[in-house]
Image (cartoon, rainbow, N blue to C red; front, top):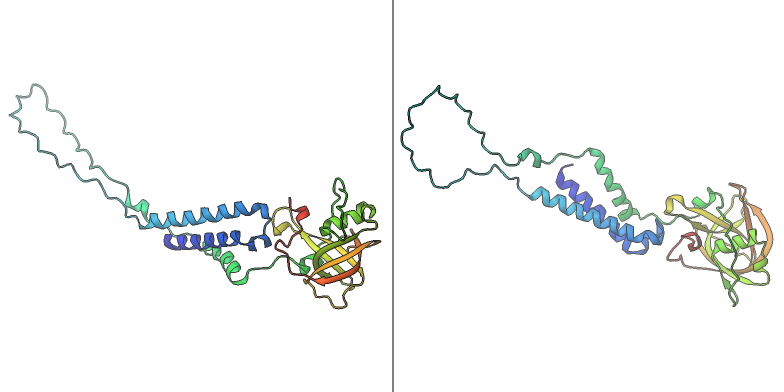
Length: 274
């Protein structure tokens, strides 16, 4: 890979990163708070590519030419030497400019071509957000919050899935008693056929994403498609089960009404995105 190819690869990578950061596609991979850093990274890559291309097109400077000032006036004959003649002096070397060899393009290792892989992945494949495949292989990551705020008035109460799960497990449903709640998540079917409603949570990016699961009972739709999004309205039930992966508690939600829902703009649970 010569310097021109390096500039082209850097430019393509930077443009793809900028395009991903500007749209909502970036929310499949990183939390929304990291979007400014993603855009800054893309701008740095594009700037580095343009600087590399400019440096490659700039011709190297040769040695500085000799001065062309007026010739010195002729001098008369030197007086007779009074001592031994001085040893002949070596002429000063001609001044040299920058070494053109320093400007030569040094080929990068072939492994640098691997930078094209994320470009092709984002342009041709565009991997979706993590879904049921990851949720089935990872145990629920429910965490106990420091406190439970009172639920707002109105029926049904819109809750994040992780908020409902935490209240059902750690508050034993006290703050949910007598209230109808509404949660949204994607469907995952456990190995024993139990339908789960899941949201993936993350601390930084999709690499550390973990699922929070609730099981569904009651008026569950007869046909459920894995990775399909559901908007569920229901009530708290003390029934629980254990996650088959890590044995953590998974609360149930008694479904009163469920309908398909479009995938949200941010597919990850906002409660833990901080």
